[in-house]
Image (cartoon, rainbow, N blue to C red; front, side):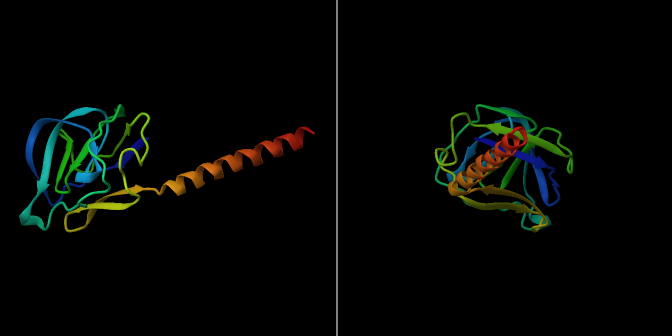
Length: 163
């Protein structure tokens, strides 16, 4: 399974709780830990700022699975911990664009304990958000069947042109 992330983080409504720590990129659906990137990074910890609204709010879980570390990944990294803490690369500048991924070799949504659905983490009174979409296994099968169908149509047209 490959998890991809991209976009930017607007840190309005959050404050830097600590800087220069070290963490690993992981997921834990049962505890609502969501991380994307390579295996570890030097981080800055961002948390709720009571003076600027409700701060970071996330789901209590997005499945029943436990902690899983990626087998590989591409930086930069981010991790949401239990719905109210955001870890970003040390020195991250609010609004800077990024693209990252994590690979879980030999894993599936089911083996990692992810439950299909849409899960949202918000901050800055809901003005900023991150959305996780976990597709239903049937949707993945349907997508695969559709891709095979397109391949079959493409091959039959090529054969008709040669004949």
